[in-house]
Image 1 (cartoon, rainbow, N blue to C red):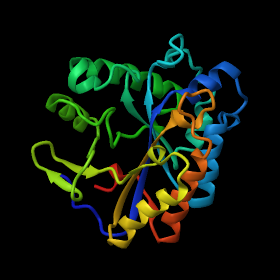
Image 2 (image 1 turned 180 degrees about the horizontal axis):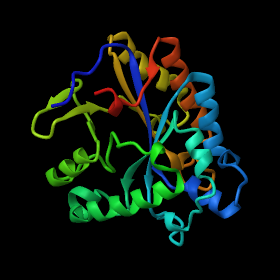
Image 3 (image 1 turned 60 degrees about the horizontal axis):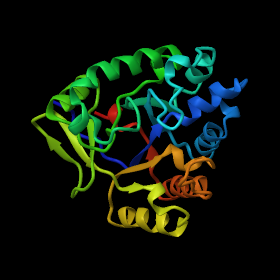
Image 4 (image 1 turned 30 degrees about the vertical axis):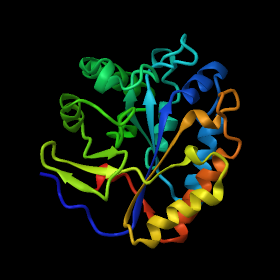
Length: 252
């Protein structure tokens, strides 16, 4: 049985659907992973606010179908490992599509997809950079898939809505509502701050913040120019209100 969640104000920051930055680094053969603007901006947020990011990643890029992680070189692994204290990677799905991959489309494929992703990521970023996810693609998975992910270290399971963190004895997990998905607010920085202040003012000790990678990219159809303004506003508010960034899966 999981340990009780420790007291204290903390937040977990995940970003879903990551594969664009892998593609970008591969296409340009950058000298450093931080020559990619996305990772560079995450590093700046970490340096300014102490934020630790979990990048929930795909194996295959559905928007550039000729790319998958088998093509990415291992020459950046030491640089990834040097930043493992704040930059971790978790399994999200094989690809962005189909929707609901592990509840409706092909839940029986999860073990094979996970193994393929994990093997590639151990080669690319190193095992110390890996962490269990806190959310699955499109939230829902079958019971068998949840048991599989629990066996692979997933202790918190994000849900769309809820009254707070609740222990689920059936799977020995904590169900946790996502408090905010930043890209849903687009350029509304005041809206992001207001939503988080609702949680802070209510005395909520554990806050779960999420976003999606693709909205940071100009070539993406739903690009948000203020993407990093919103991200930084969220991180700044957490610091201002005394919250420390943690990987929730390491707390219990």
